[in-house]
Length: 313
Image (tube, rainbow, N blue to C red; front, side, top):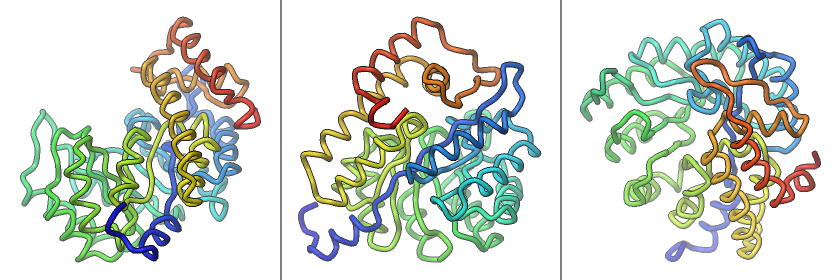
C-alpha cells in the first residue's frame, strides 16, 4: 500500500467489505427448501456479511428454473433488505437478452445491486474483446440499477483491462467490480484504473491481501456460508489497521478454505452446516453428497479452528 496518502488509505478501509455467495438449500428429493433458505439468510444477516444469491457455483444457480431463481431473489430481499447488502448473482449468460431478463427480474424484486456476468458463448469458445464490449454495452444501456461487473476465470478468458475500465467510465450505474482471476498483474491494472472510484472485490479469500495491497476493497467467498463472523473479522481487522489480527483471521479463513475446497467444496459446506445443526440442506443433482470420510476431514478443521465458539453455534 505504499504510495497512497493517509486519506486514500482511510477511504479504502472505510469502503472495505466482504460478501458470501450463499448456498441454496435443497431437500433430499431436490426441491428448493425455502424454510432452510430463510434460516440460512437470517444467520448471514445477523453477522453483517454482504450476500449474493443464486450464484452459479456456491448457489448451484445452473440447477434453478427461472421461477425458482425469481423466488430465491424475492426471499432474500424479504429476509435481508435493510439489514445487510443483498445482491443477485445469477449465472453466465449465452446472450445479452438472457442477462437483461435476469437483471430486470432482480430490479423488480428490490435487490441492492446485481452482478453482470461475462458471456459464456458455449462450446469452449471465447468472445473477442470487441464482442465483450458490445455485449456489456448492450446490457448496461438497458438496465438502470446498481450493477457489479464480473470478470471470471470460469468462462475461460480474460476481459481486457481497457475494455473493463472503459465501461466503468461510460456507465455510472457500475458500482463495484468482481475479479475472479489468479493473475496479480491483471488485478493490479484494474485496481490502478478503478479503485479510487469503484469497489473492487476478488473471488476467494486467498487473493484478499493482494487486493488490499493494490488498493482494492474486499473478497467474495463460499466460506462465509459457514463462518460469516470470521470472514467479517478479516475486514474489521483491516479497517482497524490491526495487522496482527488481520493475518491471524485471514489465516483461519484460509485454513477453512483449504478444508472445504479440498473435500468437495459446496457439497461438504452443506454437510458441515447440517452436522452443526444449521440449515445446509442437500446438493442438487448432478452434484452428489460427500462421503463420510470427506465430512470427517472437514469437521476436524472446523473443530481445530474453534468455529463453533467464533460463530456462536
